[in-house]
Length: 314
Length: 286
Image (cartoon, rainbow over all chains, first blue to last red; front, side, top):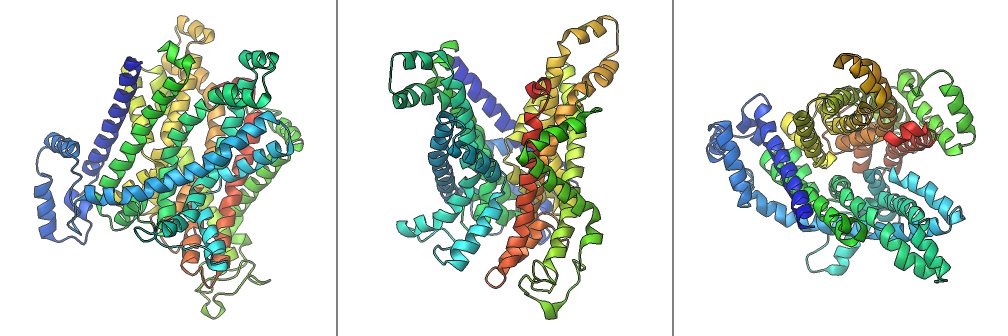
């Protein structure tokens, strides 16, 4: 188990390092003065000189790469040249908004999608099963930003039930919750159907296994078989899937945050990208990539720990 | 061996009759292709022509989807947008497919260290959430059609390369390849004549299922002002312009979103149906 854990985390770190080298070298491969690219054409000569000196852009590339990783290890993501604020601070200020949004989006879709998938598997070919199948294919494919805009049209413009812009005042929990309803719904909608399908498929597989037949032969109540014997195994692929989902959710969160003007990390990146403010984009991207890259091994380890069959082989 | 051979279309047609969702998907996809190919002949108005006296008209018999703040006919803009969506979707996926195919064959058939190196590269690209990778590239290169296409190709290539690699590895160890190898066939001959035809079929199906996600990525980045520059009537642009006047003209965002939903639905239904009806041999690789 320990060896597997080290191996799995090691691979993630390797991937993380490679993606950061890629991000770093992207700036070097692009023709033109890196300082100008980083600051945009509006930057003054003075600002360009300062960032060149501050980031050591005149040093050999390998030295720069060393400095780059050195700064990363100390949590220094650089400074935003426009507002003079540390990028790490800006990222940390916005990250909670995104995390809450993702937890809410994924949470409601799991709470509805998993039971729906279970029910569809047990009552196969029932009306609910067929309906779930149809709706899940439909909702998976609708882009989250279209859902978000339609929600705004219906619930904010026509019905005037929910607020559109921002994330609510600090300390006002009811207001913050109201600001989460539409973004959370838009983010999670596609995942309801997706989760239902995965759980249904894996549930069908487990329900056909020998230990379920044995449990039935002992005369255990069906509900207990489903809950205690089938779902515990059938849920495992879903955990891996939820980790992969984080990547997709971070992408969708960019749109959802931009549309609802929610001050999360997605909006931070979009705003910085539209001003071509590279240091801020880079800091935001590094943080999201790290978040995504570290979720994967955690999920894999969790599955290995939860599944006695996998645990035995390690 | 190729999945698309004589009798394929007849077989598909027979299967689609018993599969209403698949048939619906096919109709939607054909509709998109038709609109994209013949856009200039279908649009009732010039999608770029300003006609300010007619601005903000709700949908009516003359302007089916209404008009926007500059009096442009939304229906014409949506139809013209299908051409952009189709063009960006198909051309980028085709390029990514070609690059992915080559890299996947190299990874699967080449030396071990190269395989590991390429895998690490693919996984690293994969660890960037797509939209965020897109925004990074746009920051570096500036928003343009070329940047957008570059982004999509970078995002899509690893998926195809990985798929090709897996298929190559499974075929490589099969007996008939070993037999040919022992007869002294060159690597190039094995790859071109024996591996490629087996890999291309499943890859094409996966790629066609990716078109809607590329179309929505294009629309999404354009919505954020980082995709196709104005005044091109991308669906993302229609949504963005509509959102800024959503209080007075609800029909613009509705008209901009519906083609996106129909496109994704069409490709998804068709793709699901294709995959369910595939040869079991191909299904195993997918």
